[in-house]
Length: 159
Image 1 (cartoon, rainbow, N blue to C red):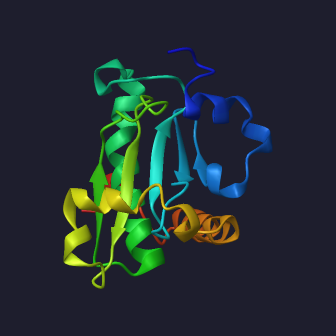
Image 2 (image 1 turned 120 degrees about the vertical axis):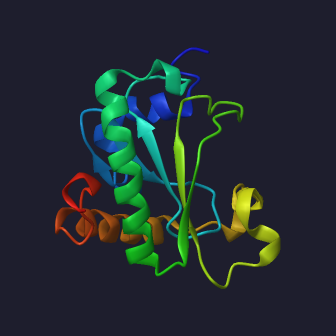
Image 3 (image 1 turned 135 degrees about the horizontal axis):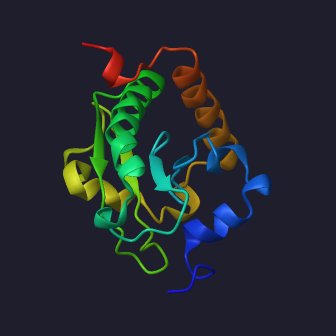
């Protein structure tokens, strides 16, 4: 797959023009986005900023920061959405989405039992039920604020 065929890499190449929900929080290794074409507000995705298709390809620095990112994002999703728990999943098998990425999914108490666990992926490709861009931007701002203000702390500093 060429980098131009990779959805994540194509977005990274136009980073300066991305809407807020496509660049919620960023560091030298990772970018946090709101899932697109998704019916669940607050569904975040953590992406490496370079093209990687397998966890085995992560550099030592990327791997060292991954766990902290996932815990902080799960905490932020719970704080911002009020969900009962945050799921974390990684597959990277869909056409055009082989780029390694981690889903951080809010599982609210009201979520139908039929959509819990891996079946939550039924809320992707939502079409007209998708979360509108302005709502994704608003959630992105709230997540970023939660992370920046210390509402959500780094797990290495909390014991």
